[in-house]
Length: 266
Image (cartoon, rainbow, N blue to C red; front, top):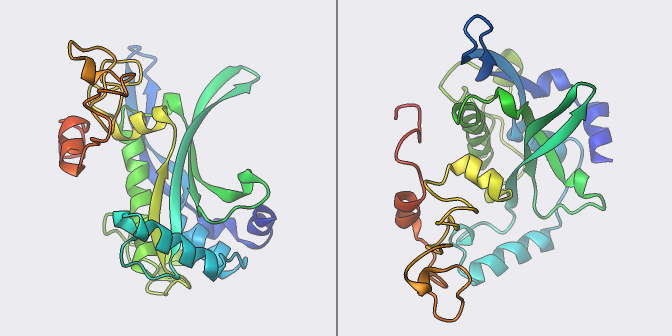
């Protein structure tokens, strides 16, 4: 029903924006893979949220919001501390899928926006597509970085509480978005989830020398598949050195984030 409302009453010309992405292609003259900048469609999460909650009438019961924040704050979640109890929690979900076509098959990468407390009868109605791109069009990790930079900017706008006055790089917004600059959102928002399977997290964070089929098999602790120390092995739960010793932020950055290519300056 929400999707019907979205397409029935929302002017998609206002919702869909275009960003420049490095798109991979094969140069037929020399057979070498290269990239070119292309305009790619995307729907900003803050535009989706503004329509769903401000126009379509989607609501989260106040009791559910209160229970969510109090429960997570009670159990020590850092992101849930001192949050106003009427704040709507947000999530980003990434996944890939193989799609069959007349000419074979292709892998697609999709990024979705969600509200974890919105649980309709159909799970498909609980996530809203931000953008999708063919896997073989991504240029190393840079294409996804550009997309996530835009998503980050949009989510920050939501959490700041008002429509943006400029784009993610300080550029001028198109007229339809510029007309909304400074307008407050109806609700408070906070990002609480970055969801996806192992493959998605590996693609997004590019865990350094860490993979589900490698020696270092966990992005969040020191569990290993091979080691001279039995305490390191992932299947050793009784005398392990990793159980209950998750990385803190500094250890995660040092052990799992790649030393280069984290941003466009490196």
